[in-house]
Structures are given as C-alpha cells and as structure tokens.
Length: 421
Image (cartoon, rainbow, N blue to C red; front, side, top):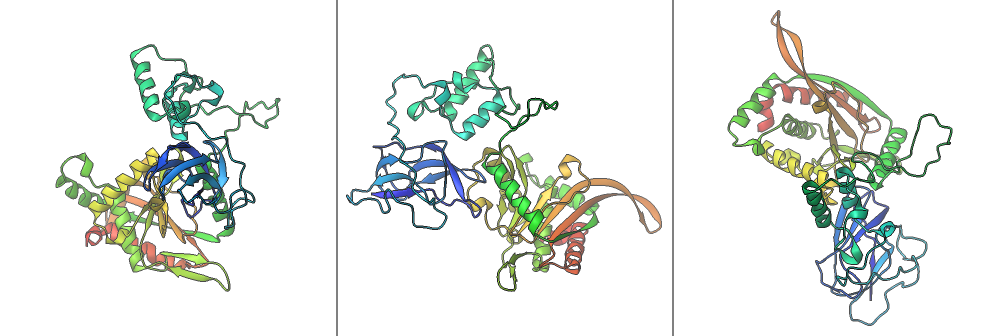
C-alpha cells in the first residue's frame, strides 16, 4: 500500500486544495496517468501517478485544503503491506500534525441519472470561474463527471444551449463578485461585502507584504529614446508573415534587459540570509514576466533569455501568457526567476514603481512610450521616449551599480542593433 501525499508543486507552496480527482476508488492506475488536479498558490496543476496499482481510497475530497506532505489517497500496489505511517502523522517537514481522517470513498460513476443536490454540486475551480464569467448557473448544468461533477465539456454544452435558446437567468451575473458572509456591521453605509482571497491572491498578498516590510529597497529611474527601437521592430515585422509571428516592443525589451544583466551580473542576484549574509550571483538569466491573468498576477519565467533570439523570446512569451490565461502554467514555468519585468505601458501608465518579487534582488517597471520634443543639434525634434524604473534590494545592489545597469539598458534601447547580436 502506498500513501499518495500532497506534493510540493512550487517553491512557495505550503498547502494545496484538491480541485478534482480523475481516478476513483477501485480504478486501475498506471504510472503517468492523470490522477488529480491540485490548486496551488500559483495555478491549477495536474498531477500524474508515479506508480502502478489500484486506487484504494481517497483521503482528501475535492474542495478540501491540506498542507504539503499530507496523505491525500492510498494506492494498492499489490504488496499487501500497510502504507507507511498509515493512521499516523507524516514524518516529513511541513506535514500536518496528524493525518486527516479518511474521507468516505467516492464511488465510481455508474452513469446513472441520480440527481446531485444543488448545494453539493461538484465542479473544479476552473469550471466555477468560467461559469461566473459567462453568467452560467451551475445548478442548472447536468454533470457527466464522476459523482455528477460538472466538467468543462458540460459547461461548454450549457453555453451552447443558452446561445441557441433563451438565456438562463444566472444566479451570479458575469463579472460580479460573489457575495459572502462578512464582518461588516449592518449599519455600514458603504454597502460593503468581503470577497475571500483564492490561493493565488493569498500568495500575492503574503509575498508582496514580505517584500515591502523586509527588503530595504530603493528605486532609480531613467528615460530612453526608442525611435530606433521602433524602427527596428517595424523592419523585423515586415519580414515576418502574419500577425502570429510579430515582434513586440516587450520582446525587444526582454532581450535588452537580458543583455544588460549579462553585463552587470551583480543585478542578476539574490540576497542569502544567514550568518553575515551573502550575495547569490546567478550564472543563468531567467527573466520573470509579470502577467495580469484572470486569476490574478502571475510571473511566468523565460529561461536563459540572454541566449534566445528575439523571435524565440516572442514565441515563448506568447505561450507563457496563453497558459497563464488558461491557468495551466506548471511549476517549471514559474520557478527559478532571477529578475522580473513588469510592463504597464500598454495600459497608458507613464511611470510607476514595482515591488521586488522575492527572493530576486531587483525588478524593472516599464511605462508607456510617449511623444516628447527633444533638442538635437540645437533643433527641436519630436521623439519617442520610454521611462524605466529599477527597484533594487539595497543589501546587495548599491546605487552606483543600479545606475550602471540602467545606463547599459538605455544604451541598448537607443542603439538596438546590439540587442540582436
């Protein structure tokens, strides 16, 4: 008998919620089979089985949240031996003080039309989110998944029926937060309601609070003329067929930042606590790209950005952004970043200050490209300029180093041919 434990799926994960079981007690399981969907502090992730056997029992039902290392199910591998630590607390760090009481096994789906009570209607977090966004009442959707669970195919079918027929009246209108029990006094004239954090928003709040309170940071701002950068981008895109292969300003910016980090490795670093402290210099340049996904802010990582051509950066970045929107980013997609870029220029923001994404040592905030008048050889000429602000951990990055990094980055943006070599 093998205990299946709540896995650690990210470097910041301390607990996870079971989103959906893809196997039920009595089902055969083979190594590599999709076993369970787990909602972590960063994304909704699929977990495969590592061993062959028969799923004996499910210990943590869908919707429940447990610490990493907690047994969530048991697999009968035919050995006849009891699972190590069965009925006792897991002996590894980060595990729960005691194993949770086994939940009643969920019977395999028999295909019968037994109705599932509305208050117990099961659905994955992804399906619930999509239902809210589309104004679909899950109580009116027949689930074809195990135990009557509403799966994405059921939701898509309901959306198709609603399009063809009279739209159903949703319980919760699209884009309207779910009203929940609050601690707001009845006399509150603001008509307030509390919307609980999901796992991703909890992690955002925790990490950024830690960053703001524990990291002694400073900011430095520079401005670059990007007329040549925009002209280079236009020439590149003229040679690329279709919109799918077009290079964005952000793609060129990522490449320029990667080259500047290679020139100034002290910025591509992290603070190491303990003893007298130390600076961790990272030999590889993994750039995180802040993405505003439907689930909140996520930072997928573009690995070895300094070794990638601009076209590869463009292709990989689009893939990461698409997976962020679908909440299908994996652990590797969001791990081991050494520096982050946060670009709000597309929203018309001229200038802002970003908060460091720990344990990284710095983050770059990028504003919008704006029209200005520049004095060139005594003549006033129109110019396109871009504002960039570096927020740095002052324990490992001094002001002079930050200034040299920004000077190199400004030079690369103003003479962009160097970005391509």
